[in-house]
Length: 229
Image (cartoon, rainbow, N blue to C red; front, side):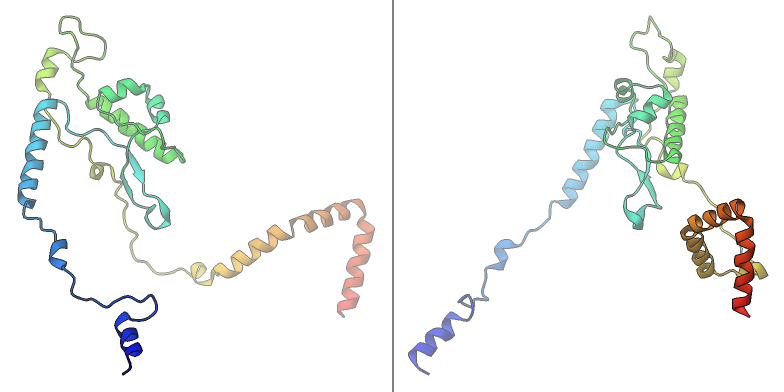
């Protein structure tokens, strides 16, 4: 092997990378031996937060929304916050809703009446269960709780979770297919519907011409019969 071939062999090909598989991979290994300690720290922080906000709930009230995309839109989950339309329907303002533990999302929009009504009922149910502590015990305003009701109040970790509001739909039982269902053809039904939509203008014109000139229509029908024979 000549000296030129030896140089080409060492330099490699294409972008002239020198082959080197002996990388110091141990420098890039990351360990997580502090995982149990982090878990314990998160738990203590949750307990500390619950004690500071007591007797208020630990988490805010969230709306029920549907996931995006065709793949997941049938599933419902808890969203980021309620819309301004939902709050107005119940008769709440943004500042008051924030002060009583209701989350708000100014970017979300109501695209269906069903979701709007569902979240409005959720807000009304929350209002019925809400115990509003008075700012001044001597001057209790309208809507604020009495001292007896304040004593009964207890802290809730999760406010109205999703599982309580999921509608349980009964599954259809197995049955024998009827003769009408057996004869039904989706292809023929769709084809007929497309033809009706396409020929609607021509058929309207024919009816109009028949009403204006009934003699011409009868002559055309007679000639059509002769042509067929």
